[in-house]
Length: 256
Image 1 (tube, rainbow, N blue to C red):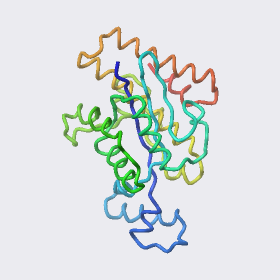
Image 2 (cartoon, rainbow, N blue to C red; image 1 turned 30 degrees about the vertical axis):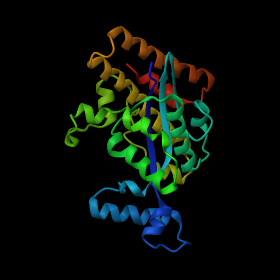
Image 3 (spheres, rainbow, N blue to C red; image 1 turned 90 degrees about the vertical axis):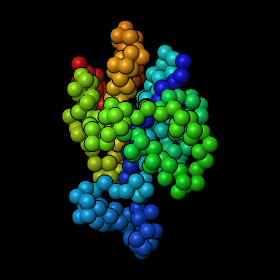
């Protein structure tokens, strides 16, 4: 059985890249560079969303089903739940390399929410900038399912937020928080909050993927129910081992 891998990235402004492109003096603080770039972007486009090549990956979280096993974890540290509790900042290169290592090891079907529009292009740009070997990247391009693109019939105007659709399907969504400010959390060193948010996203995406498979007849109702139990049991086991993983406690409490 082919493994299934859901992944999601969280990004912050690439202050090194911005320094290079806009000739900021070397002693300009990274926070000042980011503030200027975000302000200019807001003035020009009404949003602080920077171009994809100026976003640096700070977290990649994954949900992996392999056979009868399921797990959720963030890359760049110890696997599984310990990484979620840590506020250590792994290097972007290590996080990306870890992601490619997962692809190489499991050769999975890759599932994303808006991955064609955001996650995959950002990975491409960052790998190119860092000169990272992506020999195994073909596994991603050949067997990738972007749920948003498929559900909207590849009509960008038909895209909907992950949080909304997850809740409409009876899943927890983002636990009452529409979106954390990743840059603010990163500046204050609250990396654990970023990872928790990212892990909640991949859990919701995996549950929506199961519903998608049920909708198109790839899963029977019984098989769908079995998969939901697997996810629940995994999250319960995380809490038993790491009681401080309050995001999973809240996730389970809100799961209808």
